[in-house]
Length: 203
Image (cartoon, helix red, strand yellow):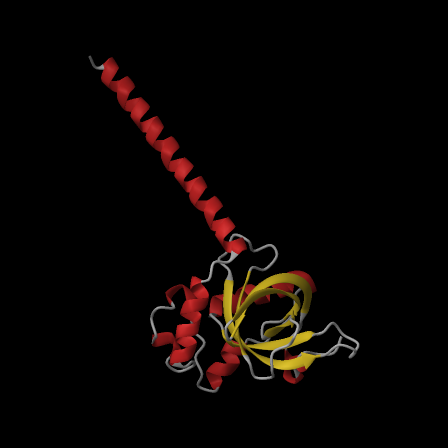
């Protein structure tokens, strides 16, 4: 398969995969499949394809990393593959805004699939150009991290994107809270039982 990005062909390896990706483009919120991923971007099977340069808000969980929170990234469309071009129709997107921990998780995922390799860190490369990629989507309400890399519109769109109910995420969180509730309930029952026994023995 041809390289998704020109520079990526020289610097970054892509791992074939099949990942459910929730995305938001303008007012459209939907789910698609990613067929490959690198630390710089991914290929999404989206039809009809958005235009080159379109901003895409992504949320996905990598296979084997289900215990981690979903990775949330702001990307832009840099390539379109149309029907009849010898490839699966879709779009290649390049990550514009990504938290450093998320990029490291992607690198780890790629290493597991492709084996040990030297992967250039875009965070380090961009640091040399005076850019900053220290973004934390868990504290997205704070505008500080986006002052140098995103507009107020980006900030608002990401807040809205984070508020979207994603089925896979909701299900995982529900299981987590049910399990936590059961543990708390069990602990309370044991504690109360010990209290009753101790009170009875001390009579």
